[in-house]
Image 1 (cartoon, rainbow, N blue to C red):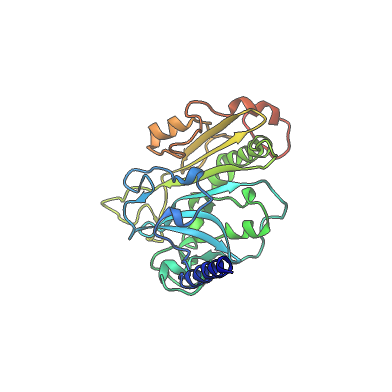
Image 2 (cartoon, rainbow, N blue to C red; image 1 turned 90 degrees about the horizontal axis):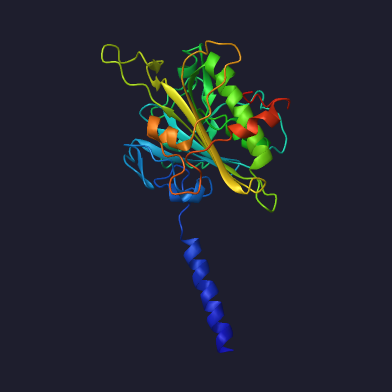
Length: 317
């Protein structure tokens, strides 16, 4: 009888504790509050922005648990001054079907404007509203030569709701159309084919960690608005991408990195060069998967030939 009463008291205490925990906002102050999208919980290391698991300037850089229909879909570290993401991190889980969303309104993050905003979900953008801490429709309407370049592309999303969640202005940056729709798009399709085939564990669970980010353009001293869309949104000078996973088929961890200048491709059917994670670190000073088992000095280029005739893969030959 005493044991039963003691157990009941423990349940009551636990209930009272949980009932007093405040609702966690989706714009966070630490990566640890948005778990599951970073390999071993470690964000990409970016000088002056991310050191270890710490954000250097929390007033400027905001981690967003990108939430749609009350489900957290991926993580974005957002630069409220440049009004573009630093990076988005997501887990590739395969493709469960569903087409690219058509007619969906673009979204924004309400808590970037008001930390006390009631909604934890991304909300539809207001067409004519100018947002203080993020890009809006009016900004992208000013640059017809630029796409809204996805960091987490909808083609890498698992289901239809995941695909819709990628259409938020906190997951895009101005990207030259003839770069986004050419070599960058080919890279995304090739990487998807590799992850779909090789990134599965011994139980068949498909899982690959991906991070995609931007290098902002420096401000032009003579013309502060030169490298900004609508005088507000930084036009990145470069974009980068990296993925890593354990492959049961290869019995090894595999990884690769990519980056390119945000300029129009100059050759037909141009491909981005596949790089190592160490090259990404040496050239852009980005450690995409710090303190992990991801290989630093090998790429997946040896896997490309088997995708040469596979429809929609677009891997280099």
